[in-house]
Image (cartoon, rainbow, N blue to C red; front, side, top):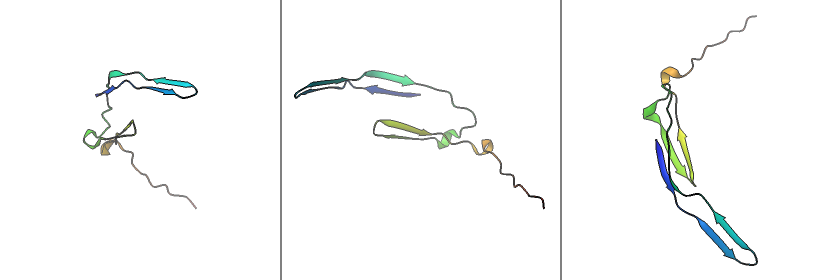
Length: 73
């Protein structure tokens, strides 16, 4: 469950031309279901420059197994 709030951003430039920039604002919420193969205790989140990055590592038992391949002569 992720929630946040966007604040109203309006800019205006009174130079030779008028520039107006508006963005949506208000509260928001997002929720999603994680698969059982995710190691919930190892989830990491980082917020930087307006971007939220979430790392969802797989549980050890859900990771693949390496099988060595032998070549014939």
